[in-house]
Amino acid sequence: GQQLNQSPQSMFIQEGEDVSMNCTSSSIFNTWLWYKQDPGEGPVLLIALYKAGELTSNGRLTAQFGITRKDSFLNISASIPSDVGIYFCAGRWLLGSQGNLIFGKGTKLSVKP
Amino acid sequence: DVKVTQSSRYLVKRTGEKVFLECVQDMDHENMFWYRQDPGLGLRLIYFSYDVKMKEKGDIPEGYSVSREKKERFSLILESASTNQTSMYLCASSRAGGPVYEQYFGPGTRLTVT
Image (cartoon, rainbow over all chains, first blue to last red):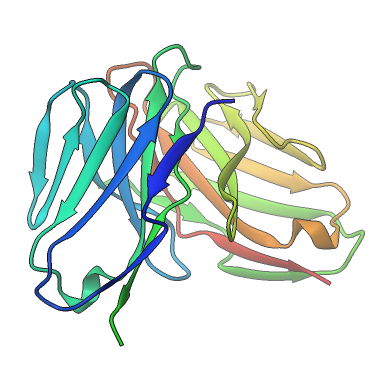
């Protein structure tokens, strides 16, 4: 089946740093979504992207739908401690079933010791 | 705001028991989904439903069944729980059709089978 490669798997942040993560696919997607999951909770939708090249912000978060339609990026500027958690990308494969999403395995953000 | 609720946050069951996980959404969404989440494996789709009384198998349906008698409610059933079904179970809902495919998740049920 279709798979999303999300990287990095994990990273450590220091308060004030900018953070970047991305997702890539071997197939064309027509939707990219980014979620954040806190420990013991369900994922919360952060940003939704529907057009190639689209750049959308939500506060300190900015996400882009890649021009090739096979990738997406999420940037967090000036990170703060509450940014820690797991970030998931999700995409809808162009030829996929109605409404179904494919999820990346997540990028875990932790605070630098 | 979309609200998806799940009947229990934590559940402990014994091997062989029948287990019901309930999910309710209040946004009149047509689509509902059940996933399980395990470390290193990400979210895996168990079953989904696009309409009342309709269900489709996801990627890992074995050992599970579902019921959707009302639009707002989607139940996941473990007919005979086994230890390898210990996991975090997440319910999600979304509107039907495009171009919006945003899924909204409930808080999850952490199920332990002993």
